[in-house]
Image (tube, rainbow, N blue to C red):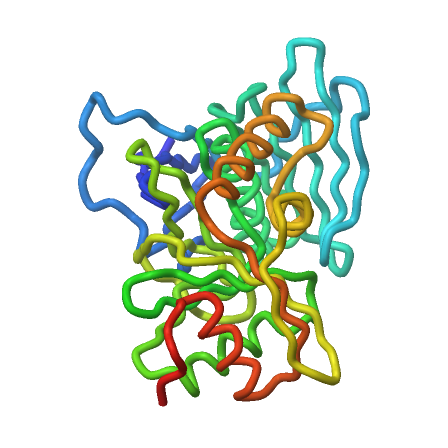
Length: 301
């Protein structure tokens, strides 16, 4: 076993440990801004503890729960009677793959890397995202599919399926709104703190944009995007707002602990933070419209 390595994301600390010569630090360059230089205090709870090895895969166990394709990956999920998971993950193109064996609450995770060594970093990063999302589900913590900018100390999250222009809209904020910075472009963490404040955090997972920042801000608003030949914005009612946020969250619908945790967190967020719906063109006028609605300020250039 190699020395344990600790990371902090969204004010949650987790531990990784490589064996069979696996160097987790080298495999996870996007996680480097989140790596702790010191061992956490003994009283610091860990979100999860992960061991990583190569090709040491057990036989499939448990009942098949789900098979699904998401992005470039195929998932085959099995669950044992004790609630533990056996999740096989394969790249749809190429030969990289890994298998996760987890406790029912994802507090203990073993990742087996398989196949092409060049794909180990990518597969481990995907496994890490999965472990983080599902271990944090009942801790008022969400891993969301969103692009988020920060302005005047508050974070504004753009939501929508791939191709709806989330990154384009946030890039236009950076272009047209002075004093704006990009916090994350794909998978920020959103957490309701013990003080009741909803905050958004940078993460090691930012899609194709290299934006791995140890930053956070209170959430100002959420923005659901839809491409249109015009610009129009409205604030969503609670039902439509829920329908916008839930699909943007990483969640296992078949797991009651996970699903109810995410549901409770989304419900809490919606009692505190507004959600807007923007039908838009990729232009400055759309930025002006969303800026005024979400910040409550008049347009400034």
